[in-house]
Length: 431
Image 1: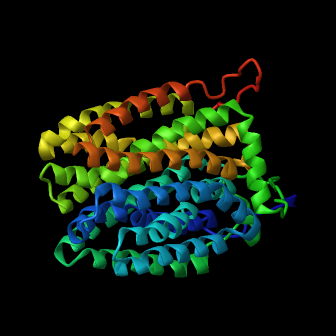
Image 2 (image 1 turned 90 degrees about the vertical axis):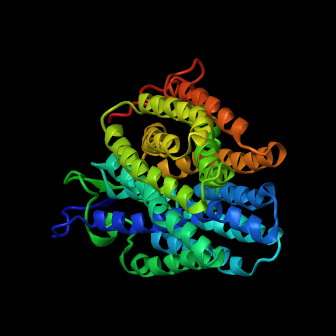
Image 3 (image 1 turned 30 degrees about the horizontal axis):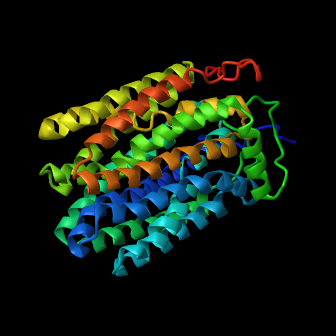
């Protein structure tokens, strides 16, 4: 145990600086992760590849994005946040720099599928969960909401820019912008990111004066990750949260994040306009996710998640009709869908921390995130197959909407003791 007797003298708690740098990392990683969705149509046009063929490396990338999560949490525990984040940024560069030279769709499998997937998976919501839990005792929900909102900010900044550049001067320049953004974020990470408050002699924000920071044992990160998985598999809450997050990934990154722009193009809406609609969703996404973090400090997270999934399901059932209504219908969809796109993250992180403990929240949420990305990968490739087979996305949108209603029912059972596992107060979300 490390006891911190007094905070360092400073006007701004350093935790907020760590949040700012983390926000930049997540913003760039989110923008880069969304780039393949912008590039589907340009690649179709230049090379004549099928939508299912292009969707496959995107799907594999989403899968690796999820698989690496619990291991990245363990590696952060072992080697520190800064080193692991710098490694993630390096993987993103390996995944995107060679993309400008591809001549066959299979070449995207190691680039977008492996390296970009690993890089974005490390620099993702696992990092946000670790930062919020390590650096904050108070305002954790708000911090998690802000960091989750970085994905919305990434969409808002990157997608319209990448789409307009792809149309105006070519998709390869869009890839170059992604690589430049990754390079730009490396210096602040190297100079400002710190691992724990104790490293600079302060307490977490809002911690009492007698706060004692737990000492993290230096264990094998692979073994620690699988040990956490073993514990999770014996928990009913783990499967409930994992099942609901499977649906979350399928209905967001996998379906809308990958196929919304191509679906708009199918209905006569230009790529740049469709990307602008995604950015428009990003505005409401940022508002909704930040508000969700604030609400998760005050309201039972199970009830928040119930309404988020139910309203998302209604939005997705409306989407096929919105596409036929052109811009005004899609704008209406964008408002309602955008408000809860990733608003599910703060309450899910809070439930994970309550169920498995603050120090294990990162790894356990990482395994729950694996379920999220399996859903995302299945939807990304599955929707591509649906389009290749039927020529539209109607059945994919409807199925995703129905699954959201199922997830809304699942989350209400989190923390309710079963006959075999009666652990009191697991899902209390207002602590």
